[in-house]
Length: 182
Image (cartoon, rainbow, N blue to C red):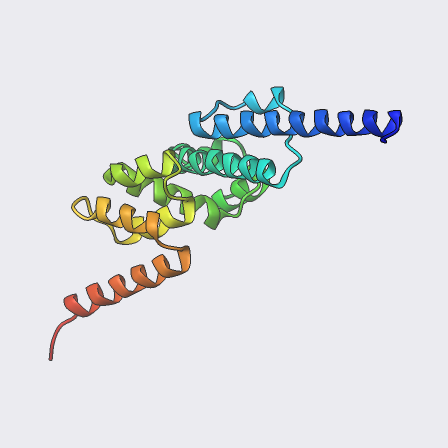
């Protein structure tokens, strides 16, 4: 027969598990709906592997959308050379010291933002987290307005490694087709 302290311990463990499951369910629900910045402060961090995974995925989705926004704002900022107004010697110095990113990282984001303006399918897939930042960078290198939907669909179904190989193959085919024949 179980002792009173064992029964209490089991009850505490059951309550703890139920609390973790509820927290995990709230995080998963937020992942489905999307959330605004600041919403994460009102919920405890999950402790189960699935709950932590869901939280990481949600945060990654938010970062991806923010990367595109950063690129859009930075493109305008650097085009107007605003870093000079703020007293920085170069755009590179501004990116490194003020933004905390390498200048090449900021350039990648601005390049993606520019391409996304011409490729709304890529922008929509990126903002809805159907594809990630790295996949969007790859797709933006080769997609045209006519082929963007097909490339986004391909990016959804491929790993980054396979997508990179296909993009490189496409670039190689394009270069071969446009090079002069002797």
